[in-house]
Image (cartoon, rainbow, N blue to C red; front, top):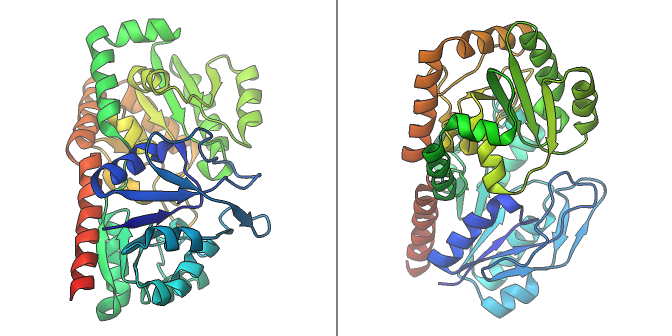
Amino acid sequence: MSILIFQRILPPYRLAVFRELYRRFAARVCYSEAHAAASLKSVDEIPDFPAERIGRRYVGAKETAALQNPLPLLRRYKPRIVVSEFAAAYLTMWLLLCLRPFFGFKLLLWTHAVDNHDIHHPFVSRRGRLALWLFKRVDGIICYSRGRCEMVRRALGENAPQLFVAPNTIDTSAQHALYDEFEARGKDAVRAELGMRRRFQLVYIGRLIADKRIDLLLETFSKLSAAVDVELHVIGDGPERARVESAAARNDGIICHGAIWDERRSGAFLYAADCCLNPGYLGLSLVHCFCFGTPIVSCLSTEDGPFHSPEVDYLRPGVNGLLPASDVDALAGALQQLLTDEAALRGMAAAARRTSLEEVSLDKMMDGFAEAFDAMEENSRA
């Protein structure tokens, strides 16, 4: 069974996923360099598994509007199954849809299924209606979460293609091994090594972009730090970094580390933190934090935002994290109450760790792909 996976880019956090997809299914990822203005870049190094780096052209300023030439790869590998990243502006996806009848492959879309900004009114917007039109014309859809999958099922009914769920995650086993290493040394020792000075420790990890509500992060910390002895470690890079550095110059409780690509070092900060504060939309950083027993404090999604990614399904308010209202007083109040309640904080940390161990493993993600590939093979034989 020959399988090709077309992606606009190969981001570093996806390396483990594509390595495992190749190991289990001999599925080759085909990817390109990112748009010059993109905040999320493709890997520079050659992956340690077979992959195809291909040329691309971006149309306009939109970083998802990539056009790649799949023809040489389709001719060389003659895939039975092709998986495409889904984005309305991803031109390669539309080309693959047009080429499918000529090459005879089954086309699967791998997707959020519902745009984050449409989660309160799925498939009502123009992009939502376009997504439904396309979903009815492919062989199957691999969704990031069960919740988003059910939204598609309800919208399409009997017109739905075959639907599958591959719970979106990272290589949790690698993070769990780091957790065990830190746990053997103890939190106090790790904090001392990192130079943490204050009683309570918060961490933010992710891109520094407007949708992550960096403004609210900093305003909340300013209010919280006036009431409790707390430090905020900001890990990430992006257009909002200057805002963070400016706030750090005024408040010595804020430490801006920039992007940290060394997993051991970023993991140390997560392990040492009491919780992660991310007022904007949540994505895979939630899984990363849970691997180290770090609860998440974000904001409840409303029609005004934040517009969380499917991974928010893993967060259970009051159990492994909190989702207060999206304002400074609600966030600071929730954080102060949590940080000063040792038993509640300890229980939430344990629940976050259990979630990472029981619900979001790479094996569970691969099970979803296996189900989709088996179904496509069976359809091909029918």
